[in-house]
Length: 313
Ligand code: SF4
Image 1 (spheres, protein in one colour):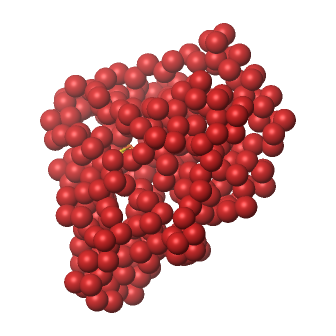
Image 2 (cartoon, helix red, strand yellow; image 1 turned 45 degrees about the vertical axis):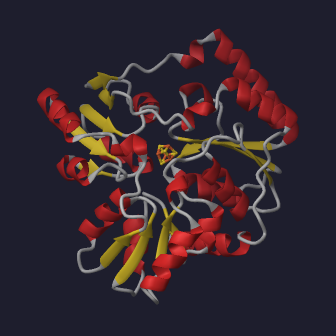
């Protein structure tokens, strides 16, 4: 069932105000930059210096001059920040915040696919481990996957780990053949959104925007298929919108347009994204715990794969 979104009035909550003041004080004392992914909860989004999708956060992490970068999100995002700015201390409030999609791909799978299709480049979604990135040719995000695949001269492209994103790119570039590795890899949150959700949204009426991690039956029926970073732009002129992605995304959209009527999808919540809470962020920045390190065996090649993507931006 579509759920009409009600944004929490977080900035007028006295407990949040105390939390905000404490974070601000520590941040300024220690020279920290706090990045938060769009899927973080409202209290975290409102204390972050920068909010955005994976691509926006990666670019900002690379440019950071602060000595400590705190990434409120999941582990692969903090790893990306560390790879792009290796001299900085990178912290993650919850070091057990993983990504079930990233866990579906292993370096062995990439090596096997490359052996089966010699010469074919492997495009890896940033939602992956550093060890997997090290085996790949170039990274992409949901925001630039089509552009990255188009930029390659090859007709056959290996792509992982999200097969729904691969299928979306395949529809945009039918002249190339894209092979998903693993076959059927998916984000359990987006993959669980069904065609029924589309039908229910259509009964209410309004504009339907979905993330490219949604299944083909959902994304083909939606009005727009874009990354979270581009959602603001595509719904700018719409009054009633159904947003098919992690529900926390609706906070920033509603904040930008308080008068829009927004609907989310019941149950579209990423448990890993929601592990970061006010207490864990405060513990992290106070004690400087959960520092990200990357195995030097993987770091140079993983960094190169990300930098090749950023060079095309
Ligand atoms: S929403 Fe999906 S892709 Fe994003 S961190 Fe959660 S499981 Fe991974």
